[in-house]
Every structure is written in C-alpha cells, then in structure tokens.
Length: 200
Image (tube, rainbow, N blue to C red; front, side, top):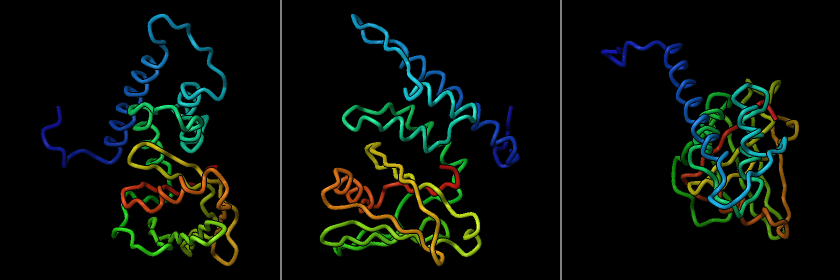
C-alpha cells in the first residue's frame, strides 16, 4: 500500500497509468462488443474502433490512428471511456501538447495557440483556412508528423503534417471543404486539446 503519493517514482506512476488504461480499455471493449438487445453482433473490420484500440494498446497502431477510427463517423457518439484511452495514449506519446489556451480567443479571425515550445497560428482567409506551425528549433530535424485536435464534446480531428520549410509547417483547407467550419470551431475553443506527434 502506498502511504505517500509523493514517494511514488516516475516509473511506478507510468506502470499505474498503463494498468489504468488497460483496465478501462478492457471494460470499453467488453461493453462495445455487446450489441443492444434484439440486434446482431457487428463483425469487426481492421478499421473498427475496437480493433484499432486493441492494436494501439499493443503498440501496433498510433494514438492518432485510434483517434481517427473513433471519429470516422462524425454523426455517431464516441464512447467516453474510449476517448479517455485515446487521450491517455496521445499524452504518453506526444512530443508536445496544449490542454487549454493560455487566453480566451479574441474576436479577430486569426488566432495563436502554443503547443509546448511550438506555435500554431490559424489564419482565416476568405476562401480558405490556413494552419502554420512554427516548429521549435530543437525539433526541426525530427518534426511533428501529426496534429491531433480534441474538443470538449469529444469531436476530434487528426491532421497529417508535411515536412517543415524554413522551420514552418503549413496546412490549408478550402472554405467549401466539409471539415472547414468544424476545424475552425474546434481551434477557436479555448478548451480544445492539441497534440503534436512524431508518429503519423
């Protein structure tokens, strides 16, 4: 029994967190495996969230891939337990994260978020939305490959990132793209979580 939490080593905390995530994963998978009364079992495919979750917990899929699987159908509700597992895996694997904005978004169309030592600038033009990530100098040689965005209502988006040019990564999306307004709303919300990962 642990008498003082301050005496717990970082290694012990990591083991505790891993056991906690595995336990919740088992419960979530067990709950998800049973269909509602009167309905047939759904055959799992390689892209099925439960399949991807098992692979992610085994280290065979990245947290970003799990997040994408959970949000493949934006109209379907996402399990709170499954999202908690995705968050825990992202936090453990991410090179940098921002769980909340340092200040509320202004009324201007453009905004800035700090993700660790990286800076994300969001520019809303008339015909497109642009994301510019200024990569921290120490990470230019091994830059982030994925930006994961999780909103307070569990809406989430995973964006693949290109290689930086002169220390900056750019991503653009046209105004007529269905993702445009959803992405902009997520990025403007101060409680949206952002994770940068080297794994795609």
